[in-house]
Image (cartoon, rainbow, N blue to C red; front, side, top):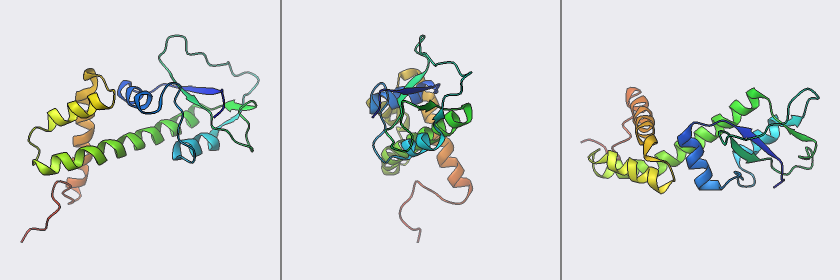
Length: 160
């Protein structure tokens, strides 16, 4: 991983989850989708583009992956639309993690005590208690979207 970073602004719960999982600055695993997105949209810094500095700590530093085709010494700029693509990839990974770990818990108890499970999940992943309600709403929106399409994700067995 190079010493060069890009800076993106994430929602507080995403930043907390990402930094807790992958450190600060964030280093995505080799061959990850997030690194592929970064490599796709990273480009040479335009002459008029300012160098990004994270003085207030409001941005999340992400290391630029090593690439023979695009060395970070020269390719260390990403446009706003490229940043949006990275944020989308991070949000997708968050949802995968959330769903994979919480869905089995909610299946086993038919939704009873799910708020406690979500709070514990947030704590386990370094997400502050201020963001628990946001994460809970995200979880329920996913479940509702599938339910509206006729897919009940809360039940593994067939009805007789």
